[in-house]
Structures are given as structure tokens and as C-alpha cells.
Length: 332
DNA sequence: TATGTATGGTAAC
DNA sequence: TTACCCTACATAT
Image 1 (cartoon, rainbow, N blue to C red):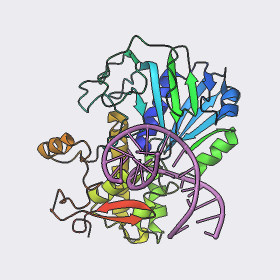
Image 2: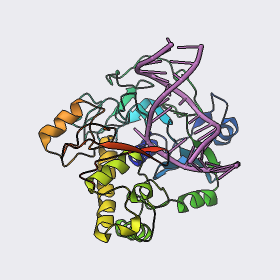
Image 3: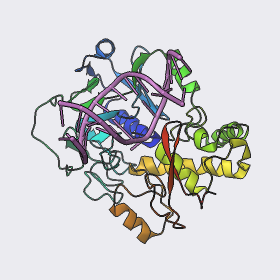
């Protein structure tokens, strides 16, 4: 489940391989047949991400709004251009395996090993559909085109050489320009979309007048865009902030540092395709944490395990039906 | 075969 | 607050 960084990566992938091209659209599953018919034969003109939502613009002022929700994913296949500014962007994006590993980066690690592409070395590659962790990322020159449909595919977008399959989205709909504007207007600032200083003011003002616990505010997409359950827990720990503190009681400088830390983590996430939240941990401890790929966070998914800083057992509680992890000592 | 779980969000009560 | 939607996969029976 993709938090904001995944969606930005996906939008970039569309920008590289679909924008400027005419698409063939279909809904193999049938649940978006009308929408697909309306898109078929149109040229994609723009790909935008705002928070966890993506907006694709087609000629004729038709927009496609997609929200992946908890289970959604895009599978790319065929020719995929690497982003010269990020390490890798191949295969399945926005999903996780059962070990909790985010598969934005299915075939590479932060150092770029095993990846089809390396940082700063853009190159085109033919990629097997449904790239998974077992896949090495070696180009699959053989195989049929277009790739066979596997599972429930809500929407397939196809150019002459690239295929994108959408499955399990919580939202997939066509919108008018006005509707797109309305959707975006409901969202809080996204550091990769708004002016950073302006975003900081909006975020700070909103938090500082709210009686709501900061742990809930960070997850509220109208307060700030793109933060999900993982980033929430990690941001709060990094700020050593008790999740139950009412927004209005969080010191202003702490609120501002939360925004700045989010801008930092989001940028790292988009670059690496991973939710790197331990970037300031010492190298050895970090390597150890990365060795267990589902255990690379400060507190997320670490209930009962010793806090990496103080050794106190990390606690988990249910907040708005989501699990909230925190250290009762460091975040007292 | 059934159940449980997940990085999300909405609408109804 | 609860119910419900969406999908894939691991684990249990």
C-alpha cells in the first residue's frame, strides 16, 4: 500500500512511457469498461501525483483519477524507461509482499545492485510483467505481446511498446477538469507539489489549532498529503512525539520540523523507491536492520520488540482502526 | 477451502 | 464508531 512516494514514482513512469502517446485502453475485468472505452485512442498528455492520488490527463480534457487504496497496484511491462533521477522504476509498483517489503523497487536495493538501471544511467529495458521479488530483473525478450492478463485487471493501458495494468484500486474514475480541481482542493499540501514554505504554513496553521491528536492529524489527507501508516509512526518517533498530543499542544517548532522531515523522507522515498526512515541511523545498525527486510523501521511493525534507542518494548494500539506503533519512553 | 492480514478511504449509523 | 469495498498471498484446517 502505497504511501505518497509510490504514487509519485508511478506518475513519473507514466510521464516517461505514456505521455505523448496514444493508448489502447481496456478493462479485462469489466468493471471499468465504459471508462476504458472513453479513453481508448486518446493521447495521454500529463501525469500528476498529489498525495496518494494520481491524475492522468488525456486529450479532450478527460482525466483519469486513480487511488490505489490498500491493495491497489500498477504492473508495468514491456519497454520501460528508467528515470534518470531515481534508482529504478520497473515492474510492480505500489504493492507489498507478505513480508512487508514495498515492491516499488522490486529488483534493486538502495545501492542499485541487481537493478536494471543504475542511478544517473537512464536506459531502456524490456521487463517481464508482474515483476516480483524473486525476479532478478533480467530482461525478458521473449514472451507474447501484449502480455497475458493475469488476475483481476481493472484497467489496461497499452502503447505500442509499454503495458500498464491496474488492479485493486479503491478509486478509478474519469473526471472533468473541474472535478480534478475539486479533488485536489480537498487535499492538504504535498511537499512535491506545493511551494515548501507555503505548505509549511498551511500545515502548521492547521495542526496548531486542532484539538485532534497529532497521530491522527498526520494521517488526515486534508491536513497533509501522502503520509500513511508507516510514515506516520516513523515521523512521530523521529520527532520523539507522543501520538496522543493534541495538535494545538505540539510546539510550533516541532510542527514545522514534522513538515520538514516529511519533505525529506518523501524525497528519499521517491528517489529510492523504499520507505527509508532510518536514514540518520548509524551505518552498522542500518545495515543490520536492512538485512531483515521487514524490520527496517524505528517503530513500525515492531510491537513488543525493543526500541532501537532505549530498549523499551514498542507498543501498538488501535487508532481509528489502524495500528499505531510507538515507543512509550522515547515518545513520552 | 477457509481465514487473516495489509502502507486506505468512504459512507452509513 | 462500524461496515464495507478492493486484491493477493501466507497460514491454518
